Image (cartoon, rainbow, N blue to C red):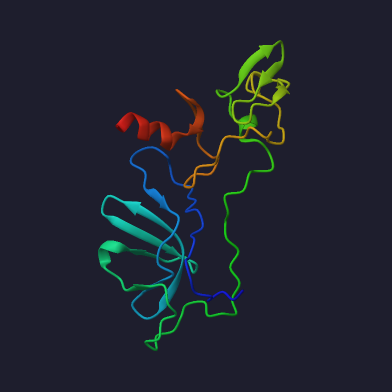
Length: 183
C-alpha cells in the first residue's frame, strides 16, 4: 500500500505533552488527507477540534488551523504545488500503544492498600508489592514498577497515560475529570 493511496484517511492520536488542566480540544479520528500551506501541500498526521475550529498537525511538524481557511482535499493535489515529504520519506507515528511499565507504579495516589505492603494498582488493577523505602523521601506507599495488567485504563488520545488521576468512576486522564466538572 502506497503512502498516497486514496480513500478514507484515519488520523493518528494527537498525543501532546501539554498540561491536561483547562479546556481540552477533542481528538479528530478522521478528516482531510491533505492541507495546503503557503507554498506546498502537507499530509495530515492528526487533528483536534477547538472552540475556534479545527487544527491539523502535519507529518513534517507544522500545524494549520481551520480558521485560516486553508484548502483541504482527500485527493492527490494536482495544482502543481509540491507535496511535503513526497513518497520516499518514511514517517514513524507516535501511537497510543500501552506503555512497557504501568503508569500506576509512578503515582502515589492511585493505588488501594489491600494488606501490609500489598497494593492494588489503580491504573491496571494488578495486585503488586509496595516499594521499599530506604529514606524519608523515598517511594514508600507506592506500587513497585510492574508491567501493565489487562485492566489498564484506556489511554487518553491527547495525553496517553501521563496525567492519570482518580475520578468518581475510577482512574482516568485528568482532562476527563475537568471535562466532567465543566458540564
